[in-house]
Amino acid sequence: MTDQTTPSENPSLQESVRTGSCLCGSVKYQLTGEPISALNCHCVNCKKTSGAAFLSNGLFWKKQLTITSSSSGLKTFQDKTTNSGEPLCRKFCSNCGSTLFVESLLPDTPVAVTLGSLDQGQRPWKPRLEVFTKDAVDWMPRIEGARVFEEMADPHAFFE
Image (cartoon, rainbow, N blue to C red; front, side, top):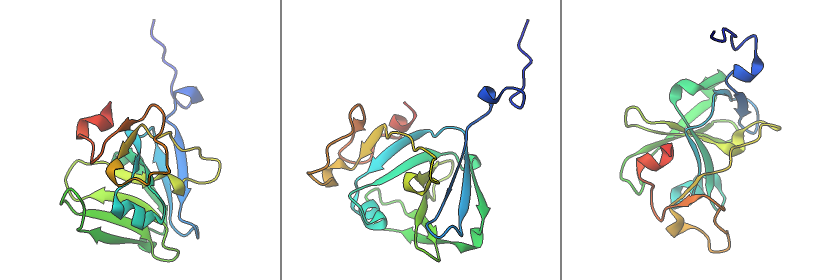
């Protein structure tokens, strides 16, 4: 006999849903399901866009991300000075400047959602990878148990 319980009848079968927004609250989003991976990026460009020692991201398939308000307030900066040579689209709120998403122009690639933009009470995922550690500040210890890469990780590492 098979269990015919549906996700709406049993909340434990439902996909997790988390929400996030920019600092001023004009751009809001929803994430469905778990990330492909979570990582800290220590590259110079991510440090500059975050204003911090690194940028923490969750990687999600684009179908997992829904902009729920003010997508018109979302602006894009095309970062052409990446270490890979492939441009990245860094998306931010045009009102408060909060960095929210980073996307590749390559097809079938995940979107990076900045973990600091999750709403209060929405616990972020522990990063499993640290990339571009060659650019990391020396006073920040590595995350215990995370895989460490001096440059960008092999794409397969994100799925392990």
